[in-house]
Length: 167
Image (cartoon, rainbow, N blue to C red; front, side):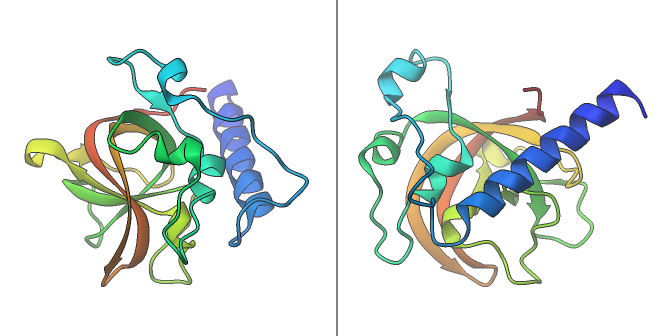
């Protein structure tokens, strides 16, 4: 097995572990994440890195976001994850979902809304999709519960750039 394959498997396993630990109801009481100061994370032209634990802090039943998460609304961010095309067998798309672990799908019980990001690429750009390999998606984040035929989604992101995940 090559070093690249080992890194990919380690990354996928780590993302699955994070999702497993956070569960559908949010973070366990004993697990804490340091507060994120959106202004201190990155200058205005660099995207703030947003993790799935922070996204999971959205209470999707009430739509309330914590202070750290709310500070990122309307800001340029980058989120790691796996792409889920909204068209069958799409290898590129202008609209897709971003999920925290490989294999998450809207056809089986989907992740909760605070673990789904709806991506619409700006200016109709198409992003190359490969659901088996993690990517970074950069764009402007909005926190809003959206009901659709694909299920409820907690976030929308106007995508500017999609590229392979590198830790």
